[in-house]
Amino acid sequence: MPTGCTNSLHPRYDAYLNFLKNQQPGRDLVPSHALGVDEFISLEDKIPAGIGRTHHAQFADQLADFGEGNIHAVVGVLYFVENTAITSQHRGETCNCQLRHNDSFDFHLGIGFDSALAQKIRNSPSVHDPKHPGLAEQTSVVAEMTPHTRDAKWTVARLNRQRGKQVKVIGQLLLDNVHANLNDDCEFSDEAGGSCWRASAWEIHPVTQFLVCKAGKTCGSDSPDSDWTRLEDLP
Image (tube, rainbow, N blue to C red; front, side):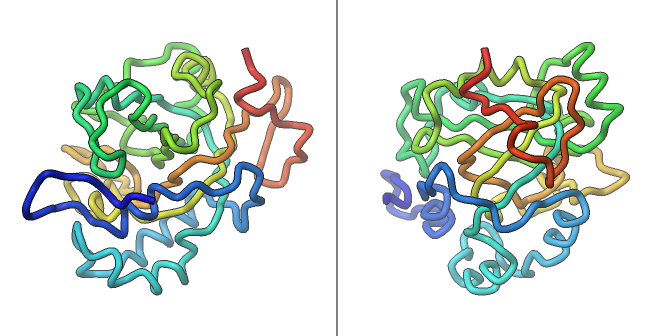
């Protein structure tokens, strides 16, 4: 798999991070663990000092001990959907070889855990604006659907119809160390504000399965498969 593409003589991307982002895990791999707020807070506390933006490989063994690279499940609420082809103005990412056509960009999903905010989003979904993050952005974990692993039926329109609903996202756990800084990472702080736009630098990337809790059900990490519907099977 490519680790990134650039014309620069002095590349600034983290090649090992891109290597992880470009993995293509099997669609039906069973998650080894389920992650909730407490687990993500614990992971935040374990981010190695000194990892910076470009030193992922130096901490690979330590991060693997925390579960990086393994398949995990997150049960929460879909707060927002972002098509980075639009929000980046078609500026390509090195992990996607700086390609600029519409189907070469990631979809960013915000997965949150607050039932009151979920109700508000269901009743009146706000416009997601990554340049002006609000509560939905600052209290949610990022999950990314990549062009390498995305099902053809995982469209932005179909995803947007699930906003405010209980979902289960399955995929690879990784630390996006580029965002392990106070400008980006709110660290699940009760006093989050300013420019930070994500609850954690840890994320699910790539997403391998996306499931939605069936109407009338209250789903959790231990709910049977019969309580969930795959995104690709929804209208």
